[in-house]
Length: 336
Ligand code: 13P
Image (cartoon, rainbow, N blue to C red; front, side, top):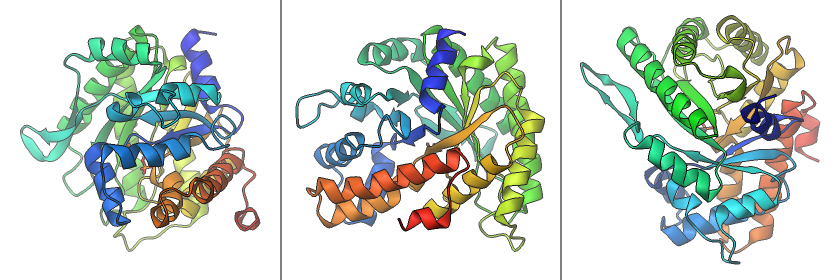
């Protein structure tokens, strides 16, 4: 077993998943504005420090993805953020892309940037304690899109990123996110996601990536949020599995879904159903941002110094996701 594969398994085995707490300062401002808390480095640290010192870290959460500001911060009790995470038995990770920019010659689409100087930044993050990384490519669905240009260029960047990350001794999370915004059907989501994933793996293989040392972070197969063709949760799970079985090489050890705008319960229930019928050898787990933090953030905003109530909500949510990653979640557990 390679060192990278060992890191992967430590993060996502036994019902553990990933907390995506890597919101950029811009995104975090939007989240904090929505609950009337001012977005400054102190408040961002306070919320994250409360989450990262919760009981579920290490038990249900095997890895936490950080943003550059956070990985460099020190907690109110003097530990660095990466040390706090590692001391609970979880692995610190870091978002290394620098964001999605307009794609030249197809400006309604995005290309993710951040390759320049990446090798040097990775060294710095490794020294700070990171052992895995994230890079997100983003694709929207409409009649014309995603274009071949967006699919090819993002796949190429994801592969160059993954190669540099593995060279630096860390595990790359490869995140090609096909957005749920739009009025498309789930069948269109299925075919576009398949095309995006197939191109990504073609490039990853060309760039000689050790596929046993990556985590794939895809979207589930859903109908667009404006679509009139709704599908059942059972169909979501069947179609998601079918898509991944058809597009992801079997060497990949694990798949950690993004929540992508699903509610906390929806993201939990869909993951549970996927695990109920998982007929692949992939570990299927979560790498949720909003679907792990939404209720905790709301509660915290009522009294930002009440650590305990925020942690209770967060521990519960993480426990529910962890049960779903084992296929053992039920509605009854939500109210216990
Ligand atoms: P959501 O689960 O809120 O979609 O965030 C996951 C993520 O990391 C997106 O890049």
